[in-house]
Figure 1: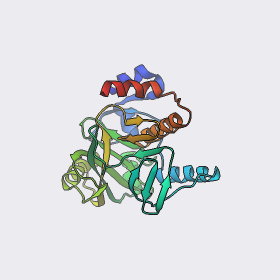
Figure 2: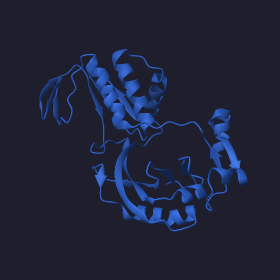
Figure 3: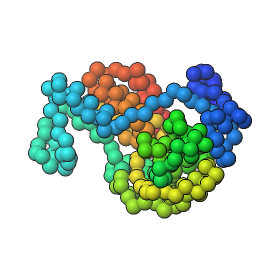
Length: 256
């Protein structure tokens, strides 16, 4: 069904693989059909933000890093590093902020021992593919790391935690441990894992609200969405125009 939707959007989205064709891509006893999507993008968040910082500083913008926002009074922000006067403030809301349109979720990543070249060859993962199993609402996704480990993610458990780093969620680890032998055909032990909490919009689009002196962004869900929303928000604040303005305007009206 997903492939059908992608095909309607355009041939460039992918191709359906079955049987031997599929086994050439991923040789797993768990799967027999899938969609191959060759074009994709992944962003290193730290590198991206560092690059933005370099650009802004080259244009005379002063950036306060590692500075806690304590409170806001009018056009003055009280921070752990002193007072900052502003014309417009932009809030990129995290897990600690409660909002009626946002919900926090916990997800877990686990990493196996390093896999031998022959193991990767058997699984057809020597080319460092990433795969996603969308059969379940809470899906598995995995990729081969630079040191030839299999990194598997699972879970979107609703949580009231306000912290992004929390103790490892054992039910997620058990699900990943159960998934690995079904995917690989053998038991591959995990070396370590961790659980993180992220904030997600309850609606189909991230939450964005704009006013003359304040903007709020939250609930992105993915790296690309966060970049798009940041681009939209900055453009709206500076120029009052962005190509996604109609989309967010309609979404805001519907949510009200």
